[in-house]
Image 1 (cartoon, rainbow, N blue to C red):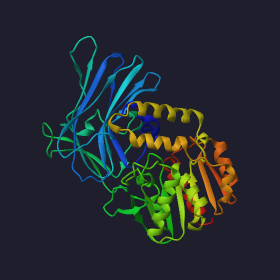
Image 2: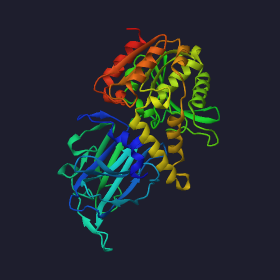
Image 3: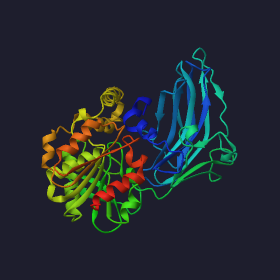
Image 4: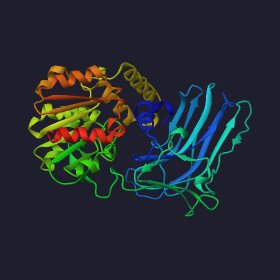
Length: 432
């Protein structure tokens, strides 16, 4: 994916974390930053050798890069975790582009997501002034990881000022089958939900839904957002599983679930997926925790199948596209145009489907929410991408609606403030 793909499904994903501490996530990055102030308008290419030792379980790894301007804005971003196939054998991966006139630093990183062993070696940055065919190498510190990784140059995270450790990952050097020299970089992911061996598939509505179950007791169905998967609830799974039977599912076209290319991706078809899924699990009634598009699905389930829903808690949901802030909606439309234009060999089909889903649907009215008779907690950050007035109106339109606007938070409340979020939802579920 090129840099313009970043806004809706990838760049938000990378900018959704700002805590300077150990965090819980399904991905990590090992990164180096280089000053490029005197290379404006030059061409660049970044290469690295990458391989992975794990089965095809939905894990991803790749090469990524970002260029920051002098005003700290981003002028280039590309992450290859989609669109490339990393195998057991070493292969060379490349990112190339042009350094813009306002550029200050280039960040280069190794990206790993989900469970597996991911190996990286021989990072190289080269530039060309555009006037000759000669490429000039800009040295990277410890580019082949022959030295200890604590010796300097590299750091865990995506910004040098926000160094952090991600739980479930270890980063080290390895002498096992390096590409060259004696060592390579090894990033290990373990115990990350969404790619666990106990996961199962369920045939519903012409597709296969992947799901994982944790804990015992009364069921709680967790539904992720547009560009997410089961792992979106890494900060919720353990806490809720102490009191409930937590069922987390990849919605169609996301995570490890399949989809029918002949059918349009809508909230209606996903609602039918969930109805059949719950029926096959013999779950008569459930609480639902939905985030973003998952919150929309929770509302849809409560309207269409009220007998199956006990309570819903929805974070960052909207009931029509214009509920999204104007500049975010505009950016989504621009991205759709770009992805459609660059859609060679159908490589962007899924991303186009996901964008169209939120640009076209749902198309409800506030009065439609009167159908929801179950207790409903409507949540958003005070800096959410959903308009605050829209969130308030949703809560007001539900007969048993409650409202929670979380201060100093954005669309990523479940990740930004997991302790507060979990306590809020659990108290609601338990009538406290």
